[in-house]
Image 1: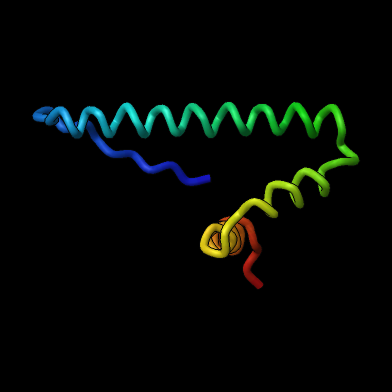
Image 2: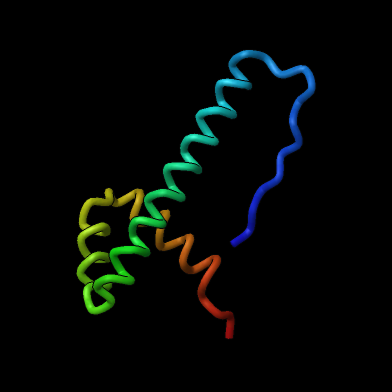
Length: 79
């Protein structure tokens, strides 16, 4: 997975600093959710399809499009 590096602004405003805290919290939450999912899959490997189907069923059409784009652009092999 590609990671984006944005250098810190030495003259950050409060709103920029708040945004960095929000982004850090989102990344931390994403990591925790990912870790929890991995634990579930480790404990119940035969339930992977069920877990994926359940998560996907809660996504909107826009979110489904974004997930599909992510998969195609990052994980599908080019012929």
